[in-house]
Structures are given as structure tokens and as C-alpha cells.
Amino acid sequence: MKLFYSVPSPYARKARMVLIEARLEGRVESEALDPWSDPAGYRDHNPLGKVPALVRDDGPALFQSNAVCEFLNAEGGAQLYPEDDPARWTALRQLALADGILDAAVTVRMELTFHEPEQISQKLVERQELSVVQAIAALESDADALEGPVTIGQIAVACALGYRDFRFADVDWRTAHPKLAAWFAAFSTRASMTATDPTA
Image (cartoon, rainbow, N blue to C red; front, side, top):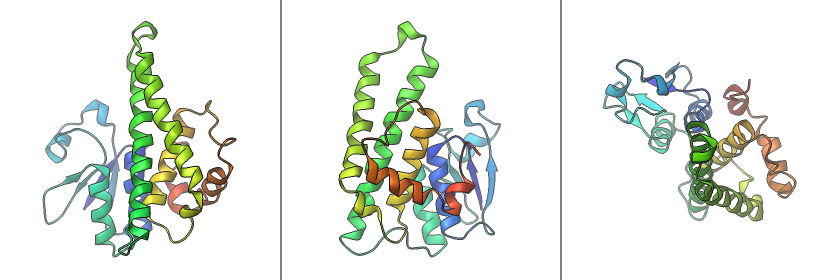
């Protein structure tokens, strides 16, 4: 199997972290690429032209980070997706909040990167940033639920917060969210986090 990823992509980072947490590094080859350059043949694996994409040995390629993550979790026999309530729903809620942060933050990043200042939609930026602020506040209010065995929810939250630090370093989310900041500082020491740090 081969996992295609881009170092800056927080979605691909999520898949790379699951690969490490599921102890699949020796069984899955990884290859970095720039999806924006549309590498020859890449859309044969992922018609959307995005990362991550997982080329399997015994089936069609998988893409979209959550599908890739769930497959890698099952392939490695990991338990990143709790089976029992309420832990399962807690992890999936965290995953939804984290993906929402990423979707909103990436939208803002694209808006600011690809448009001239006079063409930027401030209404769009403000709405997306409001979603980020509200989601981070929700994670802070339920920060205790981030403790315990590693889950896909924790991985996704760490990727979302890491992306905020990476692309929006001038925005201080920590001061108003001390419990979340303390959790993130501790979680960031995991090998899967340090190995996939886009700033490393």
C-alpha cells in the first residue's frame, strides 16, 4: 500500500498520524507530493486531486481523510475508533469539531492566498473565523473529554490546532482556552505529532 500526502496538509497529517498510531509504518509506503501541481497520474488514484489518498493492494484507492483514517485503523488493528457508547460518540463529536475547524481555516487560507486584497470577501472570512472560534470554545468547555486512550477525535483536534499554529500563528487561541492549550502541549509530544509536524 502507498499513502500519498502533502506535508502542509492537515487532512493528510491526520492520516499520517493514524498510520503511525496503528503501527503500520513498515507495511505502508508513504510518498509526499504537491497536489496543486497535479502530478501526472495522481488523479487516477484520486479524481479530486487532493490529499491524502491511499492506494491499496487489494482494492480501489481510498481518499478523503476520514475514509483513509478508518481503513488504516482497521488494517492495523488499532482502537482509535471506540466501539462502545459514550466514548464512540465523544470521539466522533471531537472529530466533527476538528474537521469543522479545518474546513473553515482552510477556506480562509485559500481566500487570503488566491484573492487580491480588494477581492477578499470579508463576510466569508468573518463567518469562517466565527466557526473556528466557536468550535475551539466548545472543545475548551469539554477539554476533560480529550483525556484517556488515544482516539481519532484527539488526533483530529491536535491536527486542527496544529494547523492554526502553522497557518495563523498570529492568532492567539491559547490564552482564552487554557485547558485545551495544556492538553495540546502534552499531546504534541507524541511521536506521531512530532514526526508529522509541518514546521519541522
